[in-house]
Length: 267
Image (cartoon, rainbow, N blue to C red; front, side):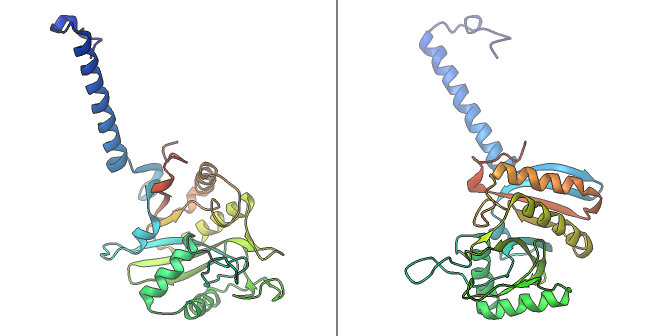
């Protein structure tokens, strides 16, 4: 504004008045930019070709997955371990190395889907195993009961996908991103995350029927892949753009609202 007209030209000579006006403009700019970022700039289009698109957005994947009022069919990706465990537990005096932690996306999903479908974790596990067999997936090894004393012992390869329907509008893709090691800890790596995303894209291409898919950043939490949020977003974007000819529909990478300070969807 001052490049076109000075304070003196409009009759403002007091230093205090100049400072107050400058401060008011600064506050107004901050409020305006905050409103734009919070309410409007929530999505960034990464790639598009006709009806096929890839977005990165801020949001809460599970809140969106369990919306009460449904309007359109969607696919939600849930990262899981290689045994597709459904035992959610907190580590403590009587529990060593919890199989599925309640604060992970995997743990929250198990708790909420069991409540919604009115089934216990064992029945949910049975549904998952039934779908794996339906899709022709077979375990590559059996984990020793001496290493893993509870939960499922059959181990499936990284990138395996099990499908569970919440209702006619929401389908969950359970994606294996980590494997149990000799210490009974589910661990992953940058290479494993890359392989998992590549297999997810392949599965979505064959089975997604063009419905929009929503996935979280993966490898940043309990999978112990030791990658940052920035690295995870870059890795997922790279995998998708490398296989853009297989994108049939829209893929949406959801960055949790609470992680805005850790990664920008606009870079």
